[in-house]
Length: 114
Length: 115
Image (cartoon, rainbow over all chains, first blue to last red; front, side, top):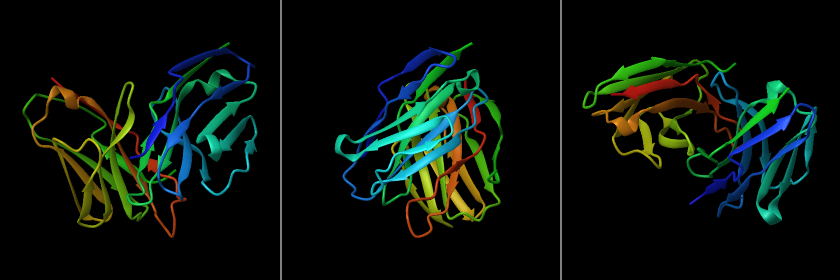
């Protein structure tokens, strides 16, 4: 069975601080995809990024960056110079080869204080 | 934005009554999913569909059934609602293509309260 663990339940930072959200996963599949989704206070789920199991190149997109390390089964997400609008619940998720369904972590609530 | 509509958006129902939630898509995507979101659990898969009349169970399928008679519609039925089914329900769609690299798009969610 697959599992995604987001050990940080809630993080509070002050605006302009950098913050890293941790994600650790377990899977027996050799091919899989990892995702990050954002759920702002309005409730919708917004796709942020996907990364496949064969591509460990880390990515930067504006203030967002992702660090995928297969050796430690981690897929961490960093927000640089956080802003109040980054306040949301962030979910890490993993696909499986059979159902193509997502297994989600329990989420990390990020609060950015002005 | 992906064309996914969930209805109703909010519902309050009594214990023991049947409830049906509808998910409608305009993207012609093959895969459709129902998840429930509860505090401390993230989103958990209830049922999914990989084509018309092709459905299967997820991790938390007890007390739920689904049907997909058309590509665009995926119905979730609570056969006899219980208070433990109070939750926010999300529908999602994805196009499998030739791999796993398609992200899922989510509906706006349905907040269901069973009293």
